Amino acid sequence: MSSSWNSVPLHVSYEVLGWFAFVCWSISFWPQVILNFRRKSVVGLNFDFVLLNLTKHSSYLIYNASLYFSSAIQQQYRDKYGQKQMIPVAANDVAFSIHAVLLTAITLYQIAIYDRGSQKVSKITCGIVIVAWTAAAVCFFIALHNHHWLWLLSIFTTIQVSMTVIKYIPQAVMNFMRKSTDGWSIENILLDFSGGVANYAQMAMQSIDQSSWVNFYGNIGKLLLSLVSIFFDILFMIQHYVLYPERKRKPETSTDEAKSSDQHLAENV
Image 1: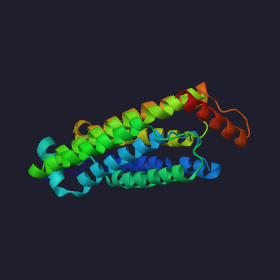
Image 2: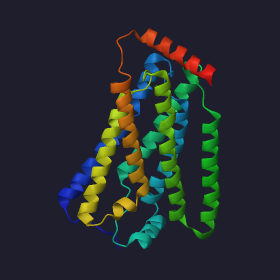
Image 3: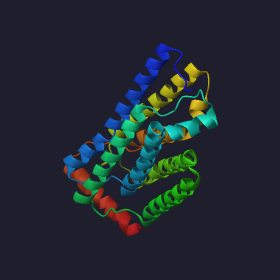
């Protein structure tokens, strides 16, 4: 027996907030892609961030699509949290995940074809990604034996949260070392922050309607992802607007300075 909405206004608010978050999060990928295209350079964009981001969104897509489309996994979810509980994944979550994977892949392609300066993906990041996907593969075969699919999704949730925590650190450190956010799109951060706030509001609508907070702890991955993202969004906004405000200078000069700074960082490393 599946649950249904008790309040039409709350249901409408839930859908509106969900798609608003989807639009904000989806659009947030485009400013960086456009900035890279206009500059014909990815100097200033941390490559570790992009690779970790692809791993994160791929894991998120697997989680969302599996829970949204698989009736077997949905039943396992209700067996654990209650038969009347609503599935905490909406259509906008699946749509966002697909879009996120595609746009992150495009950004990786830009890294391959545009001016990179002295920047490169670190060995530590490559190791983290390999370990994450190896662990996921091992857990898949463990789950395959007893069909513990909901447990497997919890593994992908762990990967999502871990990648989200880790992925922002290289970019934040890089901004700090360069004392600049040139090459890093602030529009991406503003839209991501808006989407995160809307996401929390959407989850609250469902919890209020159902008089239950299972929606939060039953989808801990989505909860933690938004919390971590909002924290780093605020950090990046402080870096961009307070610590390293943009100076009036020609784009060519900015790019040259960024390359020089990156070369200096590489030599120090």
